[in-house]
Image 1 (tube, rainbow, N blue to C red):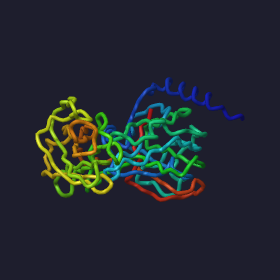
Image 2 (image 1 turned 90 degrees about the vertical axis):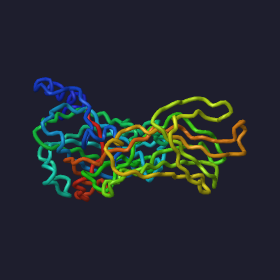
Image 3 (image 1 turned 60 degrees about the vertical axis):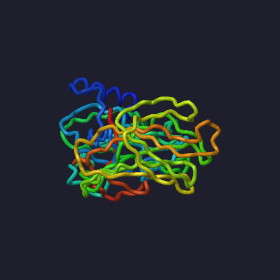
Length: 354
């Protein structure tokens, strides 16, 4: 019997979905919808970095049958305050399969034993990273913006399922760190942030401000911390913080004033222009998800502007809750031809299915 081509398989899946009454259009963030707007506490370098294989089992969508036609990934947003390296035009050759699977608790490090039904190849070919990935992400979490469309797979909703990506070739060795999370991780959660506008140009580059603070669940405190990059070297810096936005141009200043400040905290930049001011407050749920508006300034006598002060972009910063419990596990290995890998039962790359 001749195997139907991809377009026919997709049409058959569509018809099966219509006949069974399954939703045709859905966007579901997994391992938990919590992560749709929050940074995971981990990063995973598999799938797009190098020849590798990663299998991820999802038990969190039981009872929600649907037709999957794509899976979307996002970059890791925070690594100790730094944005992960830009990925300039990387191409990846891979195959993606989907299948019903054993329950999370029954998963093993043997790839084949985790699938309980027929394994369907939904994609096989070459993909390219999004053009926007050629520049560092300006938010945490980064957008879910690397969609891998595929032939379509009908998820019955009756039990766990898996996807299994095997990368056989990449155009370069640039590492791609995907955002990931640990179930109910008790130690900390990263802040979230969005960069607003752009900072001034200094001798070290564009003056940037990013979030790098944590909810320290184990210690019952919030560390509100930001990282400034490319400040004038070895210079006192001040971070303004408030709850409102003014976003006002100041004559003679090389950038707009973003926050309506109510307080400030200070640090001195190092030789590279990195400065990390912070303060700590006791755990209080009223802080969670509240916007803190911030911006960093530093004196710069070499500036051509009338006011010899440089400023960063504005920063909208949020303290986030601790990680929830989720039912997802992953099996990964460094080579795509291995039959077994390393079982990471409480970790998962954050993805979106549609």
